[in-house]
Image (cartoon, rainbow, N blue to C red; front, side, top):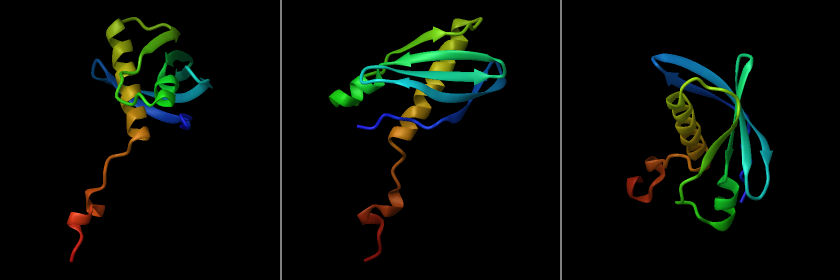
Length: 108
């Protein structure tokens, strides 16, 4: 299964302030991947075990995330960024279903 992701922009609301991160997948192997989030001159790196889970077919198992680089003042901010990143990746992996194309919604 192809687990490569193209660079994208992620908007996160922390304490009623929106931050825009440039996200890129900087490293990928059969077991781990590393995402680098850049905001201005700061950067944060997250490591996940998503390639391992997808290659084994464990699509419903929770992805484990680990912050491996960068500094954030509050743990809650880091958790919010992690949730938004995971949510965006899930949307890329499995786009929403288009009910207009469903056979029961087609005219006779």
